Image (cartoon, rainbow, N blue to C red; front, side, top):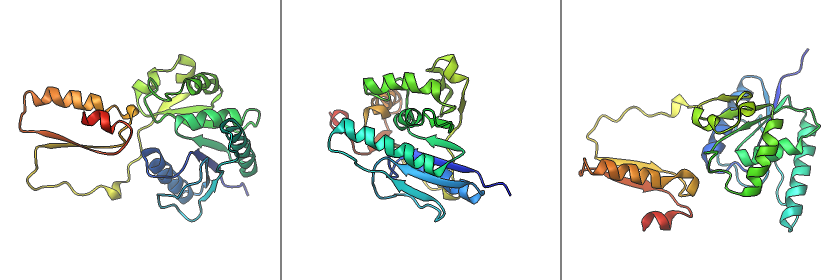
Length: 231
């Protein structure tokens, strides 16, 4: 009898976040459909999402005090773990993790798919990581984009191996539409970081506000950009 298909998902950690939520949803879906699924996290952190008990979560964690050595040893450990699992494919997200998964598995013959989770014009925001993306992405077997615009950022050879997939939605968690009296409020929720581009939202609302003075915008979140947004 042929063995079940195996997939290994690699991410930084399963803390609260959009990519992490998607990983939990996908992993639960995979195992419910007979696909063996393992999740490897680069960092050690509490798992914030409910996972099927059949899903194995394997954390690597810190390997050295020196930053360069720590990264080298972590990705050496990553390669070793993936080779032990022998998956049919590796799915990595977000993009900075995908870069190093691709490089860590060079010569392994294990297919790697990367999920682009951010605006590629802005993220990653570290120059060396952006350089490594140019080196690594041509070696990927597949790339998942969230939008056609994100896909358009990359050269044709990258676009050809890519596909645009929207985020999965758990219909069971969507509440019934509210039928009461609504307030004239726009609400935004997210990490207050540069990549989220809340200044664009504020600028757009300011244009709208010139016509509709009885509306207001409320933003919920924490992050390094909070002070800038409040000023």
